[in-house]
Amino acid sequence: MGNPKPKVPLSIITITISVLAFLALLYTERISSTSFSSSSIFRFKPCAKRNAAKKYVKDKRDLNVSALDYAADDRFEFDPEECSLVNGKWVFNSSIKPLYTDMTCPYLDRQVSCVKNGKMDLDYQKWEWMPDDCILPRFDPIKALQKIQGKRVMFVGDSLQRGQWQSFVCLVESFIPLEQKSMKRGRIHNVFKAKEYNATIEFYWAPFLVESNSDLHIIADPKKRILKVDSVAKHAKHWIGVDILVFNTYVWWMSGLKIKSLWGSFANGEEGYEELDAPVSYTLGLKTWANWVDSNINPNKTRVFFTTMSPTHQRSADWGNEKGIKCFNETKPIIKKRHWGTGSDKRIMSVVTKVVARMKVPVTLLNITQLSEYRIDAHSSIYTELGGKLLTDEQKEDPLHYADCIHWCLPGVPDTWNRIFYAHLLYL
Ligand SMILES: *[C@@H]1O[C@H](CO)[C@@H](O)[C@H](O)[C@H]1NC(C)=O
Ligand SMILES: *[C@@H]1O[C@H](CO)[C@@H](O)[C@H](O)[C@H]1NC(C)=O
Ligand SMILES: *[C@@H]1O[C@H](CO)[C@@H](O)[C@H](O)[C@H]1NC(C)=O
Ligand SMILES: *[C@@H]1O[C@H](CO)[C@@H](O)[C@H](O)[C@H]1NC(C)=O
Ligand SMILES: *[C@@H]1O[C@H](CO)[C@@H](O)[C@H](O)[C@H]1NC(C)=O
Ligand SMILES: *[C@@H]1O[C@H](CO)[C@@H](O)[C@H](O)[C@H]1NC(C)=O
Image (cartoon, rainbow, N blue to C red; front, side, top):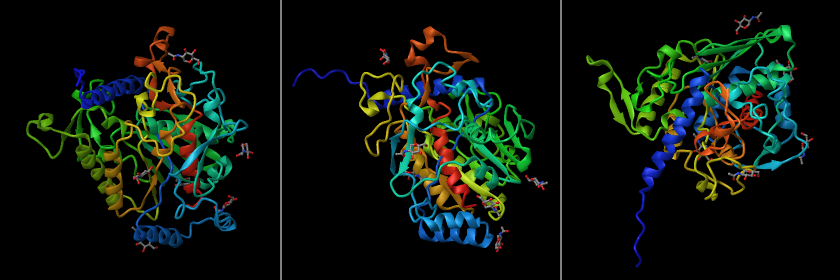
């Protein structure tokens, strides 16, 4: 036996990576005040639940007849009851053209406007998600607008949810004349209005869903953040009366540190927190959210969606590129089936599965984790901003510190999340 090399325990590596990831997230979060995300739906639920969902649709008689024909005409067409969108592959098609660009859509944050920010390689836009089990309908902006006619749609969550919101707005906005649309942006609440459809597409910033001391004014140091894992009402009162709610929360829990969690009321105020492992704290927080939904949402009036984890790609060894620097310079999706990296925490996924399964109000999961896991080529990387300014050339040359492998370029992967969301909207 030779001298074993001193080994750094893996857990330390993991923690360092996650803290780095988190810091990267932070500076991007600090600039823009709100966020958003979305994804696809996963409908393989226990039978009882599936039947319940079916019944709900029938009772409501809200299946558009043409949508029904659409489903009946072609057995292989997407059907939320029967088709999992989780398994599939990305197929390259050079003739694909996104419905918008970061030049044509006026509502995109600079953080995600990669081409405007200097990205030359557009191949990342030409991959299409092909589920194994069915055909995913193409996003039809007019149909999407018709489906949300007279409705309020609200995306709630973090900056990834903000990306999904901006993607959805950009996918439809060019089909609305200038005088028929408006955008009101705020720190917390953003509202895009499509006047002729009497519809709004909104984003509400709540990165943990539950309350924290870092919601309105973001606290850069994760150690100083305290989460009120049993409180959601302050945010949730803004969700009342919305017709279609799309939630997410994930990456903010992943600082790699224990989460300072507070519940009940303590005479000593914020000092009464306990430090919990992320999955434990996440469970408490998500249950608080679930209880609120179950007690305040009338499922006959409001549809609830939940976008699963958006994977981060901070560790190129995950996909066998030992010499790589995070997702920097990656130009192709991962081909290996079921690739799953360290940026998607299975423990968090199973919390979501368990909590949602016990809810009274049916929640449609947009399960985008696996399909996004493959897309190491589609993050903002160095084509992003910092402190409201484009990365400088020196910063671009230091991808280890400056490449953003959490957020996604737009147009890009979140458009696919919305294609899945849209497929479900067709069944509303
Ligand atoms: C059903 O969908 C079609 C086209 O998708 C649309 O023209 C029609 O207005 C819809 N009907 C209802 C009742 O929503
Ligand atoms: C490639 O994309 C074009 C335009 O969206 C589409 O018409 C065509 O069917 C696609 N080809 C394949 C093989 O999917
Ligand atoms: C517009 O939509 C809102 C709900 O978002 C509804 O209360 C209102 O009655 C609608 N107005 C018209 C003219 O359809
Ligand atoms: C939803 O609608 C069903 C059938 O119309 C009705 O039985 C049920 O009480 C309604 N639920 C709520 C919460 O209003
Ligand atoms: C990134 O890719 C470009 C173009 O392929 C190449 O010239 C450059 O050396 C790569 N940079 C690194 C650090 O691998
Ligand atoms: C989402 O899909 C993955 C497979 O890619 C699965 O392991 C996971 O349980 C699903 N998540 C939920 C919340 O259903």
